Length: 141
Image (tube, rainbow, N blue to C red; front, top):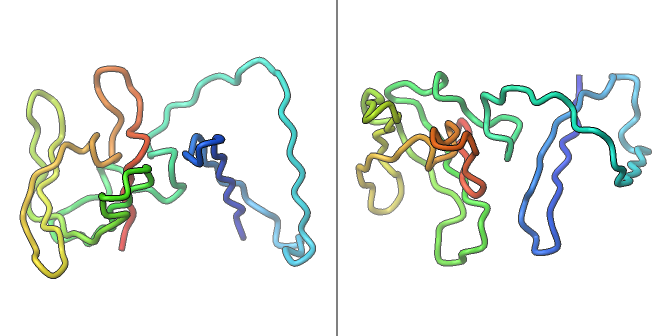
């Protein structure tokens, strides 16, 4: 089964929503026409999100293990930040004040070891308000 991924951006080009919908195999995607319209409707009951809404295949904390190769993506507007980089989960995930911390080795010309809060990578929502990081997410490599 194929899936269609819809990315919605605001006037500044910032991603504000991403969703994935299955397409029946009978749909011919070469002649596919997509129409959109904005309507005022009551909000749907909120579903618990266990995955970063920036990407349908974003990793969950439970997907990570020592030695896992990951790709860290940045979708913000700061041009001096790398847009994405490869890394390996270096050791066991630790918790500090109930906040998971992911030890990674960033790969590249000069690999280096660092520890990053899972919420800052977009792997878990922030504990304070339950929001997701709006510019970082992680996928499998």
